[in-house]
Image (cartoon, rainbow, N blue to C red):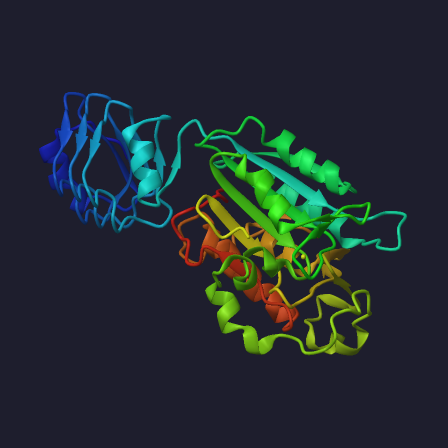
Length: 391
């Protein structure tokens, strides 16, 4: 539904328009005044013509179904609260170094400004060593396909396996070498981890949280780090960084009290507590601060917890996968066992996209339902404004 009308007539019509309405603003428009579209809930998308130089305060406040707006570089002023109360899925299309992109950054709004989405997906299988894991190869493939299927956030995915510690850090630097401040860079890691939060290279050498952060500090823009590893909560733990996530704080009573040094023990005795989709053979995945601006981090387990993998059966197909990795993909609309699209299960708001918080909440709850001794955590908490997973 598109109509070219005067601004006055448009505003008069919008409250009576059907849901998900899209309109063209008149080309002669130079300013969108204060509260011009306030509480117009029928508005879903809008393109601001390049004749407009100013968007007033609260201009689109309360437009709860506004999912997408394009703002050209001609706009030099955006008033306070211009997009407060808009839908969680709001995506601002802007140009680099513009008032719109600056406003989005400072007001925690998702935006694209010639944005490139890059992902490095690492599955450490340690083939031919005593540390061998089966699941990470399938985790890597599932996450690669999941991200590659997204259209509105077109991820450029690089996959790697069996990296030494040095080659892991080198790959991080090379994959994200071209990133700028408007880009999004994502690392997904499945493999061994240690109690101090270190990730483990194929050569059994540690990549410490400090080394990982040092590497990513060189990369501008928004950075997402998702780690399916035992003790991975150390990456954002209170002990390492002086800040504790809400998930970690509320789950301390659930920490295992057994000696977690038995890192390769079989979990057959506890298999009955898992849903029937998982078979009885579980292997613990032992793999060990990034809670600062620009970082979005999800860890599969708390600092004192281990992360499990198991045989998952779906649609007559069985694969060994990390419980958390399988849950993450399912939440984002991809079945990592059957390699097929699935419902967007994490989209609890029903807006057709998966925010950082939704991806975390679904994966955490689903993984925990399979393994009550595994509790995911995230930084920052409650992040509904950033939706990097858009089909």
